[in-house]
Image (cartoon, rainbow, N blue to C red; front, side, top):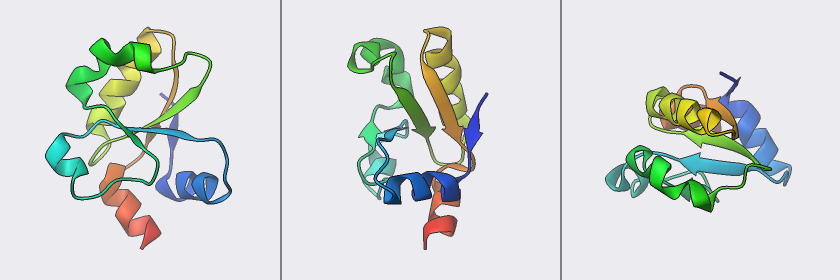
Length: 98
């Protein structure tokens, strides 16, 4: 599974690259804050919401610590999507971007 460090993803976002971030945490977790521009699709809804994603795009998956986003990557990869997991999730994101 491809992975990206939070610092690298933050750099891509700052450089205005066209970056697709999907946050797979639950509603209450996302309410506490998310990566600017990230699309929220809870992990359990991924299989039912594949139609919202484009197989020609690349997606960066994010959760709290990296476990659920890893599972989301496996699901999407099995469906033919190009995905990368953000290592350490939002816990690492907060450490890297503060």
